[in-house]
Length: 111
Image (cartoon, rainbow, N blue to C red; front, side, top):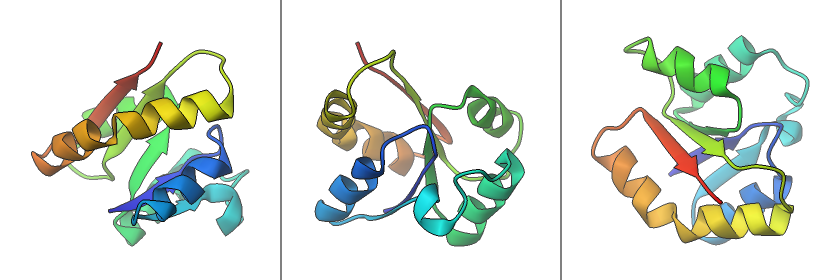
């Protein structure tokens, strides 16, 4: 799968997803770290990428339309990058299953 990692999430997430065989890029590596939401949204569509974000606005926007990228909405409080990456990757199979069955917004809640 192709993933686009939003600015609020660590670059290390893209590296780990790539190590697992996915195509994953962080917005900062594309010069989009300061980009407005519509630019990131459109880039994800153009690249057929699944957008992983902590930004609720993307999840709300995707839920309101039939068009747009698949959104993985990460809901986790303040934590270390290592913990965040480990928790997300430990649930990756379930997330991928949700995407494959057609879910357009996948809410990932970690505690």
